[in-house]
Amino acid sequence: MMLLRRGGWTRPVLVAGCTAVVTALLLVAVSILLMPEYADEQLLAIVAESGTRGGVAFGAAILTVPLLLLLHQALRLGNAARERRLAGLRLAGATPGEVRLLGAGEVALPALAGAVLGVGLWWLLRVVLGGTPTGGPQCRETADYVGCTFSGTGVGLRLVPTTVSPPWWGVLLVVLGVALLGLVMGLATGRTVTTTPHGVTRRSTRRRPRPWGLVVLVVAAVLMGVAISAHGRTLADVGLFGALGLAVLGLLLLAPWTAYVLGRRAAGRVGDVPGLLAAQRLVADPRAAGRAGAAVGGIGLAAGAVAGLLGSLVDAGQAEAYYLFPMVLVAVCLVGALVVVSLSLAVHSAETLTDRQRSMASLHALGVPTGDIRASQVREGALVAVPMAVIGAALGGLGIALLDGGLFAVLTTLLGVAVTPWLALVAVRLAVRLTGPVAARVVDPEHLRTA
Image 1: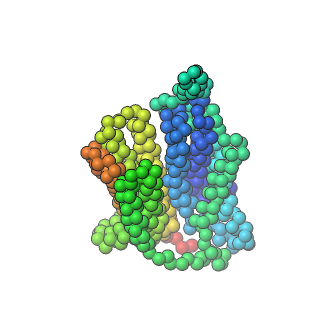
Image 2: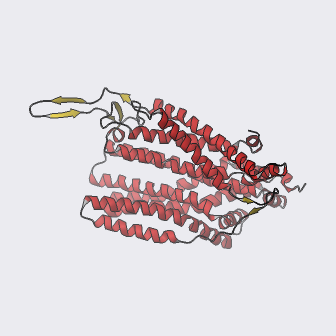
Image 3: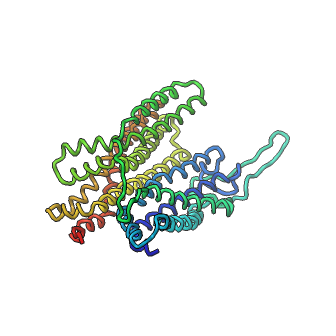
């Protein structure tokens, strides 16, 4: 607890918050998968029907990805100060094993606390978004008919099952699994080889990113073309899901290279302080910003697909509440995920500023205003998030538009490509505003002291 207090409460609160929401979402997904074929409660149609609830559970699990990215960035927050505290313990006589154990406890405690709080958040979701019991299906048998009628569907925002829940040991496994995942991620982000009690570490220079993601995206486009021209429904579905998976992988591989290239180009062209600071940070560490940028691209991919599907439904004359309401719900979830991912970009930028607070204080002492340092955070996030949002939205909507070929599908796809980057930029600005106090602290002249 003393180490947690010395390190500040920002990182433990972020870690606990991320693990709490991840635990709640996973418990919701497990509850949906445990539902019987005919649910005994009134739920949203896509949750109540056995043919579509698997996709809902998968979507709930996918929503944990941006939260895990934010968790990864939160665990990196203040790594340099954390290493100095642990090096101080080495000087005080602690062994390397004891220091590693203390470092693990510094991560494990907030991760476990958040996972336990996630159970309470899951119960809160059951109260707010839970279904209403209906008594189950009504079955009858006559001379010419044998079957069941089911009235457990509705349009209301009833998403979480209340008549079924994971057993106690299942809840325990989810809690321990999320806490263990947080611990592993924390140890991975702080894995440096301390050679002396003075915090000296060996770090190898990493190679610059390569554009292998472009190759994967080309393969995804070819597979999409095969899916569009396929005659059988099964082959078309397999090709479509395969192309989607390759597109996500391509964005993941392409994002660090995009961050590196844009950072180098910006460094050679911009002439103001915020642009130079943002560009140099991207060139120095493109992979961290690229991970969050890849998540923005994945969200853009889904947003473009939803926009294209909406236009496709209008073209087919099937713009009904059964289809439209779930898509609106998906759009709301995407906006929330976009905010979370953009916040992870801001946390990464704040972590970079904190680790370089001496140089930032020197710049401020030489006349660079605090506003320019905060503006560099916006530039850094926008340089990665906006291009990846455009690429993702174009890829997601293009496949639907080509598959449909209708006017509204093309128009809604173009609208999605136009709107998604602006949403990414707004989210980046909001996140930087929330982390503004960090930029104000790092320019304190006290950081220039050498003794």
